[in-house]
Length: 167
Image 1 (cartoon, rainbow, N blue to C red):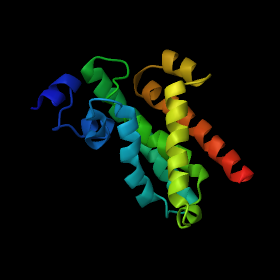
Image 2 (image 1 turned 180 degrees about the horizontal axis):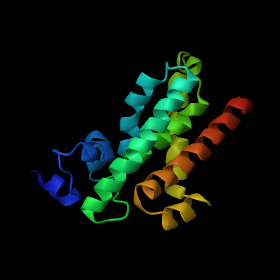
Image 3 (image 1 turned 90 degrees about the horizontal axis):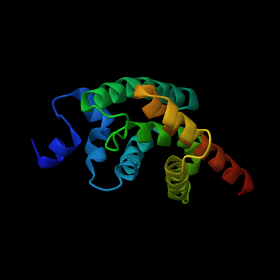
């Protein structure tokens, strides 16, 4: 086992660790949430051609899986919300990108929408305005780990919707 795996508690033999740690992206020594969100982009690009109900269905499935994987991993690590757990960033980014129809991604400025989604989500995830901060402090377990990022994703999606309207 590498020293990074020892310091984070990552156990490569456990599926829920692979998920909770964002397929290893959460093992980044600095800014694991940012690296987790970056790692979500290729998965988003694979999902983006899906029609909205299927995309939303996958997000719901990933949320339920995330609650389980993050809860189990955090309990095994003995901490409330380890920074290396980044599956919540994946789901939060996917929620953010609900506001960007796939047709916009086919335009020459498609990457600008992905960048805007990334920045908006990271802003709300780091800043944690009300009620995100309250949820982050009061709700425990896998639901608590996931819920603050779900709310950050919703706020970021609303920001992108306003941006789409203005542009």
